[in-house]
Length: 281
Length: 243
Image (cartoon, rainbow over all chains, first blue to last red; front, side, top):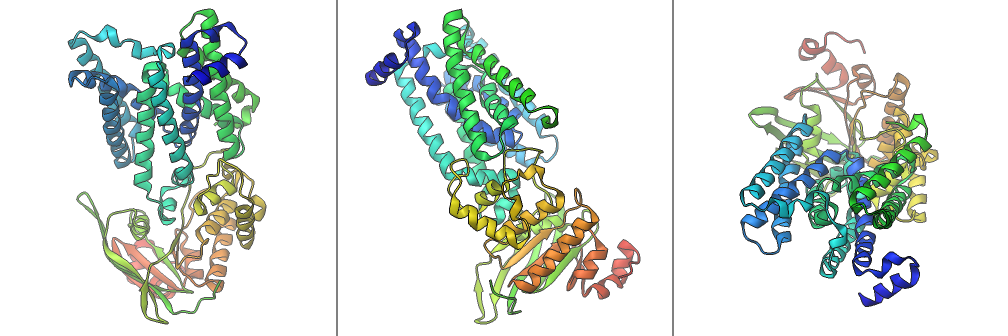
């Protein structure tokens, strides 16, 4: 960690890098944003934006359940709940051919309401309200390690299964005919999204997490012509708005999350306008 | 690739599908030989697509599918190629024909570098269907006919024992459909595979099919196009059609 710190200090000539919390936040952003960017590419292709939004909202119930069960490390309760919720949501989504968005909305509302009720009942609500907007500056060294491990798992999964995910997204019966275990891969994918969302929720916040998944990929999709460009631009946009958002939030004293999302939003509209009206879907 | 020898036989035995309380398919058995085009017809909701999905193992079903090589009379694992009716595309989407094709046949993720060897291999195979010039195009920008060519070439690499096609109903004009049938005829003659086609165009089905199966929950009538089209069962559902 010390070595990374000194490298950061050496290459960044700005004053903010002298603070340990800024260094940690910067490392966290460099680790987290590309993961969300690549996971987002398939969320956008599969039109699952609403689905991933529901996963984000379920984090609140996750926090509450973890607390009620008295699991000391709040993350464990959240992650177990996230996996169960994601699998259940995926099952229901696949079972219902029409009106999937309705059932997702039902799940999402119940998750939020249950979370709020449980937290309020135990009188702990204020303590956890920071989860709504998140606080990247509060990330610790140990937590960075968790994120690092999660990142490696996601990258490995992406490398091994991306082609299969791509075929499933184009036509699941075609995928089946090519010998792909559609259900298994689909389930692992949503579980990974859910776990990533849960791990990052305290730094990004429930209200902002979905934009981190959707916006870089959606912006990239506006201007990309193939899968290579799609991934490259998504990662670049995500890294740019993440790092720039952190620096701007430091100098202007605004919470980091919203600044990152606003920058991503600006990039989205820039790519949309840049491609002309023919491109709008 | 080997020409059809007529010695390979795919047997689809007693397929039944029940979803909830609805019986969608009842005891459907179909035998197809290589070099033969079997066309399945039936009104909407007759269970045609469900039958395809059952054969592919996507829908829970009873019954089984076996593939027999009559040369040595051994049952072998069947390779099935599938051409979907439509795919999930949008205009200008960042998936090229190469991306889609390579995703189906190799493990190196397509978001990394283009694999030169695979690229040439794909191009070579697309050429058979006159689609090699489309390799770098976005799949969202293809015409209905072009997309069908690409989908057929994906389904036939590697060469399957059984090729299943779901004829497109939208986004493709009469010429395109004619083209589609031409390609199938060519496949039938030049490759060693059995072909099952779900058709919505009775006229063309009658013209190209070796065998027609009228499906309505179960096999109502099967035989040559003439036999089926002249049958009472057919006329009850579609009226009289001249072929």
